[in-house]
Amino acid sequence: MNIQQLGRHILVEMYNCDKEILNNHKLIEGYMNEAAEKSGATIVQSVFHMFNPWGVSGAVIIQESHLTIHTWPEYGYAAIDLFTCGDSVDPWIGLDYLKTMLKSNKIEIKDIIRGETSKIRYFSNERFQNMHFKPINLEENND
Amino acid sequence: MNIQQLGRHILVEMYNCDKEILNNHKLIEGYMNEAAEKSGATIVQSVFHMFNPWGVSGAVIIQESHLTIHTWPEYGYAAIDLFTCGDSVDPWIGLDYLKTMLKSNKIEIKDIIRGETSKIRYFSNERFQNMHFKPINLEENND
Image 1 (tube, rainbow over the protein chains, first blue to last red):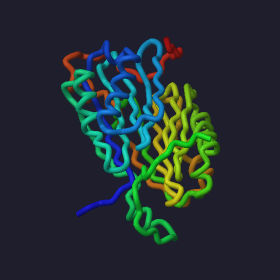
Image 2 (image 1 turned 45 degrees about the vertical axis):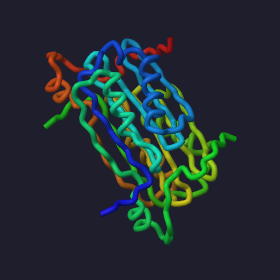
Image 3 (image 1 turned 120 degrees about the horizontal axis):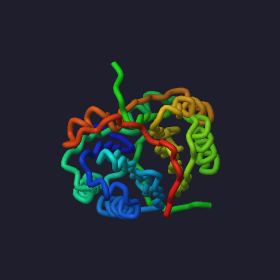
Image 4 (image 1 turned 90 degrees about the vertical axis):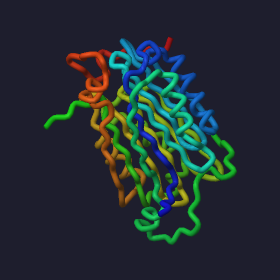
């Protein structure tokens, strides 16, 4: 069976990470951007913030959707999302990289279908033909 | 039964939205920011991009985690995430607002536990006491 979907969304619970790394927003931003690139994604913009007394939150917007992270250094825990679309990106490579860099010894993963094309067709009044993924010849346009 | 979790992550498949709205990144950014505020979240930063030939991607980083959206105007479909932590935010209010503004007549929801405290304890070598949510007396610090 081959389910056609517009996006794939991998939700990762990352336990027992290095606490100092989880609290360093420069490192985390660098790792998240590197993870996007290693996955084959094209980075559009990256925004990261550090909170007092602890924790980093950030998102990397990619042409193929996004990566996000929220860290709880005090518990060694990070919630990571890798949302991608298209066949040119392999989020598992980015995930492997992040697991290594954050020094986690235990992760849990949910792999969620986003935009299942059969459902989009079913719930719509239109008859879409040849539904396709983004990006197709993407050119950024921020006008 | 009361499951304690650091974050709540609501994944929304929004079908049959207004196609013109889905392709207007100024409107989408405004709606997403308004959804965050209506939910009781504190906005840290908002980043939105429009892609050629179509589609909007964006994230609103909030002190309590994030909201994201990716739209496929041609199919009337949007993938929306509302990731919140703490008890002061009610993401369902934001979701209701977005459903109305995007004129969707059909949504599907997954409500995912992020950072279940019993698992964090189980997988850790430490004995965490009184695990708590963020934010607590949050002050933004972007040094």
